[in-house]
Length: 320
Image 1 (cartoon, one colour):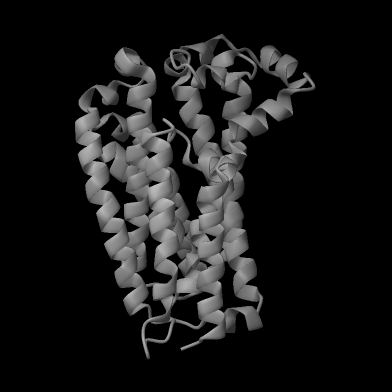
Image 2 (cartoon, one colour):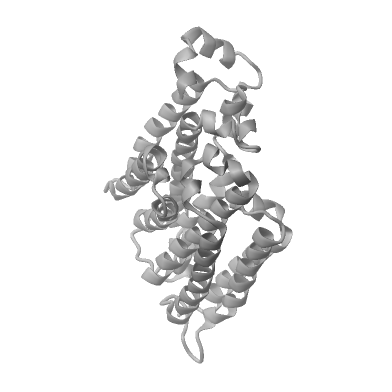
């Protein structure tokens, strides 16, 4: 962040006057990655309450949607801080060098102001969503861990860098459950944690392959990993996801269990999506941006959509 000190207020004003400034700022906020925040909606479908009760009363859906928006603001503030800290490292990356801050198209001062505004706006929003302040506590934990502990310390600690990122997905699910006062099965939280680990390991592997010998120059922690190690971790997590989700489907309290667990019908979609993602990682050399893969790979996106339709069909047509 050595460039931060070179920007005067006049420089920031000059940058702000450019027509493309807001477009670059929006790009730096990474709206494509907001798709990760859909985990807050898990409580609507997989809570111990019945899904159809929530559709009869739209208020819970509105509250979870507001929680989704709050997480989007918080995540964007974190992305801005992370990019500001990693300006020099991003310039050594073949793809990240094109990011707004690393390329010089966006002033760091503008990024600092925007990150501050987003964080300050999230606090009253969280209080309005849940006056009990529990959601604010989850959101504050998310910002503290992902935005500061990870950015300045934990992303340089081997294995913890992946685990900490994975906990962000679990916090999203917990936050969504808190705003509508429901409980979600621990097995589902485990599925989310494992899925996040799966995506994080795939991202680390992609970085190692993409950067080859220069991986350590971009991100020091990459020197602590190897392809065989990550491949072994990927195998363990892949099998664990399938087993954990299968147990979730078997034991889900929101679906009938007789004559057989109805959510079993959704398991093939999960298996296909995982196998498709592995294909994209190992054959296509993808995996660096899971959100982009989900948006551009039609078979992967289709399997996720069909899984969602299958879950809703089971829960709505066969209420427990």
